[in-house]
Image (cartoon, rainbow, N blue to C red):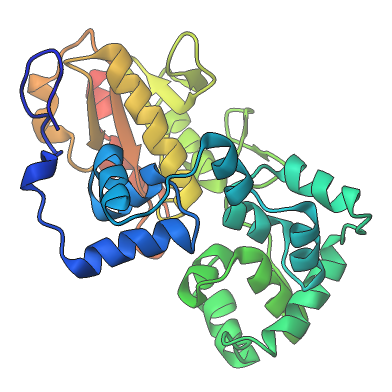
Amino acid sequence: MRDKNNGRFVKGLEPYNKIKLSIRHINGIVDLYRTEGKGLSEIGKRVGRSKTVIKRVLIENGVIIRSSSETKLYSKPSSKQVAKEYDSGKSVCELIKKYNMGEKVILNMLKLEKMKIRNKKEAREICIILQKHRKVKIPSRYVLYIFYIEFQWSTQEIGNLYNVDKNTVNSWLDYHGIEKRKPIFGLRKKILAKDGFLVKSSYEKIVTGWLYDNKLTYEHEVKVLPNSRKRADFKVNNFFIEVVGMSGVKIYDENYQRKKNKMVLHYGSGFAIFRGDQIGKYLPYLKSNKPVIVEVYPDRRGRLTKKSVERQLGFLINQQV
């Protein structure tokens, strides 16, 4: 694609006359636009081409381009359609993901059709009934017991294994009568740490205990940027300490990546991000006036001990003034 200002081709986008699309690709683009109702930008992302290229391909193949008003009507479902799917057993979360709409919008559509919103117990009962008719079968009690009790996997981890959400796994545990444990992290009630501060997870409690025992000066829940709500778990001098306890959970990873991106843009060159067990060899090259993120990870089994914390944060003892 040619840049209007410089007269050069923008990197990553090929000019239209140089694009070689097979008949299969062209038919796929037409099918996505006509039958599935996908937009030009969405098709472009899938195929790896610009919006303009997709539009030209469609016009050359005799496809009439929808107006903006037609696109809105085509993409958004009617309240009757949403209510019908909800009545068939789909949850509100599934409808949000399918139509890329907000929770309030979906709930308002259901209220408009006078649908009764299910509570958690009713949703789980329906989930159990529907599992019998779906391809994903309910795992046996023995299998769930091994994963959940013996291996101490979380409901999210079991859900990732079977490609279902954690609420579905909770319904399986209820179905087999397996007693659910309190979550290791993300508790609604905060935990009292050694220094008397309330922390959000058992991981943070262990890190707090190590910092307190080594008599380091530290701060809890420090803002990473002046005009942002994003916070780091701890701060020692210019080191922001992040306890990465839920790595692998999609929502957690996305939020954490967003936080790091904002910090990179704000602090610029000199700002660095390191794992705690790898930062030692880079310490001589770090700028003293620039903040650094130090990531603390649990082991492969999801455990974090004082020894592993000392291995990852031991350099702070020499850094403390």
